[in-house]
Amino acid sequence: MEEFEAILRLQKGDRDAFKCVFDTYYKSICLFIGKYISDPDQVEDIAQDVFVSIWEKKRPFENTQAFKSYLYQTAKNKSLNLLEHENVKKGYQEKVILTQKSSEDFFDLNFVENETQRLIHQSLEKLTPRAREILLMQLDGLKNDEIAEKLKISVYTVKNHKAVAYKYLKENLRIADILILIVAYICHNR
Image (cartoon, rainbow, N blue to C red; front, side):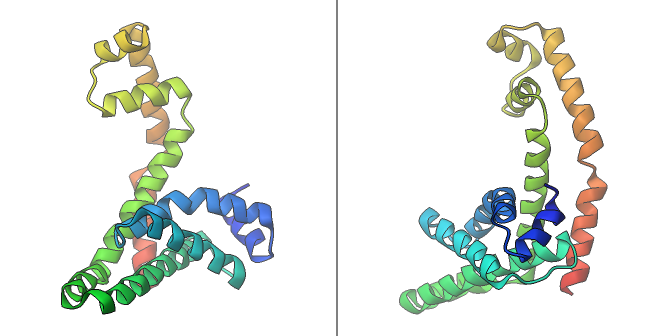
């Protein structure tokens, strides 16, 4: 199911579409909320609350970008609400942290960072298991010969898998897509 199709079906109360949207964005929303809230249990509670809110409101969205903006803004607001609540308990020191974390620059930077990570992760998931494994090993700092030895394959095979993976990522994860995401977000929220 395509992303926007799932969003449209979600607005009509389709549970399968909700599951699709939840599966697509839950990890990213948790990472995003984690920039505000350090307690993992609270992060998950807020993330689930964000999705419950979206399910209950069934607000219409004109496009995927509008949905993402609403999703992340809702996560931000719920996170800040929790911080404000804790702020009452913890006093002035927490107010300083809240001010920093509620700035638009902090929000913008984390939104773009999380969406970029989501796009990269989504692209990596579409690679063959072996190509993904080799690419992740390389990102962990291993050289071709070390990867080949660990996987008991030839260095040539490692290079082939990497070439295929890079070609796929280059074609499917264009920097232009990320820049369009950034510009669309900034224009929508200014």
